[in-house]
Length: 112
Length: 114
Image (cartoon, rainbow over all chains, first blue to last red; front, side, top):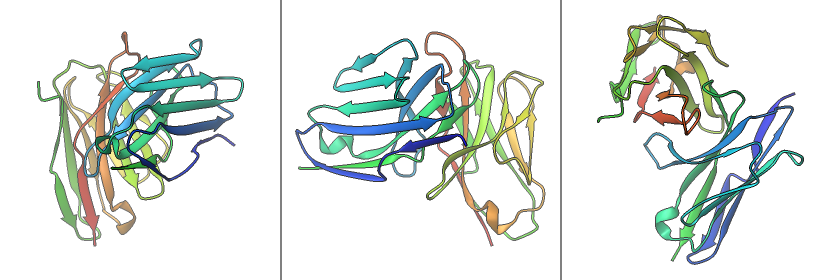
């Protein structure tokens, strides 16, 4: 069966550390993988997109990797801050412009 | 630009009542989507519209109907609400381009069915 899993529901880290979130999938062949941030009571907000032929993508303190052999994406936040506390969703994009398939999310808490 | 707007923000219905959730976007996007989000289930696609005049079922379409009124507006209708439809509903839009398939979400409608 097709599945997309984010390895943990919750992740707690200290300010200044690097947070690493994992997204695994089975029986899909995504063209793209996207990461979104969702704050309580609000809609998801796009963060980064990585294509199947890209290994890594960076944006400021964010880094995403995509390993199509392992069927896994890692999402890193370096020098984490309490303001980074939120739920992070990974999403598979099987074909450009079609609907996304979302994981259930990982809630990150950064303590000062 | 307002982005994606949804009305109402909150709604309480009794079992069997009907209602329509409204969604509009001002980004000239072709594609629009309706999701529901439940604790422990994540975001699940109800219906989507790849372009004006077309609609397709998603993962959980039962109990819902949609209308793509024009390029800007995409509504979701519950004909006979059930407690299982208590959820947070998100509308989203996207356009194929440099950020292929990136979706822009509205603020959500929190629906409770008693």
